[in-house]
Image (cartoon, rainbow, N blue to C red; front, side, top):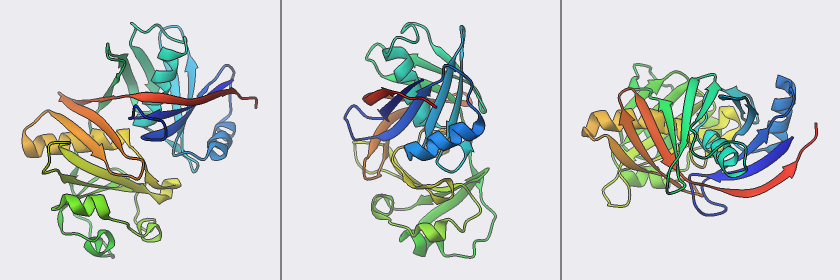
Length: 264
């Protein structure tokens, strides 16, 4: 079995979000995949089995399997296109827990991922903790999708500077908390961060699936369909997002860190 480590949503080594990609040549049990993800100790490890017309893809954090992961999908497609597993002119169809996901290699060597969008709704839940105190800024609104809390702030500075207590976030009955704000500069349209201690991730460096939530939200607010997005983690990451009907196109780059043979 081949194992790759890829930095996603970046053109630079040691930026973006690292993901492990296992190209599976035989059956692995769920326990084995979970153990490999724990051993890799990255936010996600992807397991891909290549078939003739499509590929089966699963994602594991160090804590559990997750239904959708953008950066590990990008990393997997990068490996398949660039390591000779898949013809570059053929889009890859991934069979996943979130349905069929399609990834295309663009002429500029970036990758475009076609994901289902998820429009958040206003949260009617009352929280026992003070979210403004936790994140240190004035909240515009609080939204939700299943298992995720989304907090929109009035100020971009809050998103850029916040340093919430992970032990407090873990007490929320969600996988993680997304924070975002509109930008007032020309470099990007909105910024965001993702804190998910309940998934074993204190802060995710760059989160693809989060942008399938934020893109429909900001499109509704601004009436725009295309965005330059910035994830303000320590490693930072950039991507372009686009609304197409009820789908979200995420466009980004990736770079290989290393590859090795891996025996289980």
